[in-house]
Length: 230
Image (cartoon, rainbow, N blue to C red; front, side):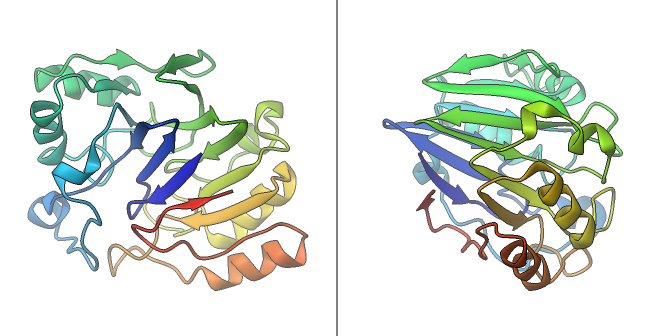
C-alpha cells in the first residue's frame, strides 16, 4: 500500500490501482470563513486526485472541504463517499450520495477495509479510522484529544503504522500526548501529521519523531505530496 500525505489530516492510500482519499482540504475555505491562510498548496490537482473512495472523519472546514468536495463529486461521479454522522448529513445537504460511518462497524470498498474508531473532538461525532489493505493496518487518528478510549482500544494495538495529530490546538492532542498514545499502542511506525498548514495551528514534528526513535518505533517527517510505502 502506498501512502501520500495531502497536508493537515488528509491522506491518499493506494493499493492494487485503487485509491482511497481521506479528508482532502484542497481550497481556501478556512481562510475565507475563519481567517486561516494556507502555508502550502494542496499537492495534487483535481485531475490528479482520481479517488475511488473518499472518506471524511468529521465536519470541519479543513477536513470536509465545502468547496472541494462538491467539485470532486462532480468530477468523479463513480466515487464512493462515506463520512461520520455530521459530515454525512452535510454531504447529503450538498446532494452527494454517501454512506454513514459508525464507530465499530467495518466497511469495505475497492479492496480497502475501514473500521471507524472513537475520536475526542469538538465535532462530537468525529471518528478516527483503521485502514487495512495490502497486508497492512494503519490507524489514522483524525482530529482528537488525548483520551484513554484510544489508548485502551485493543483494535489499535500493534498496528503497522499510526498517523497521528500533534498540533495541540483546537481540539487536538499535543505532541507529548501523541508520544504517550503511540507508546501505549506500540505500532511499528508512528508518523506525525496535522501540522504545517496554518501558522496559528502548527507544531514542530521533530521532538515527536525523536521520542518515537527513543522508544524503538520508526518515525520520520512525511513530505507533502510524496508517496511512501511502509
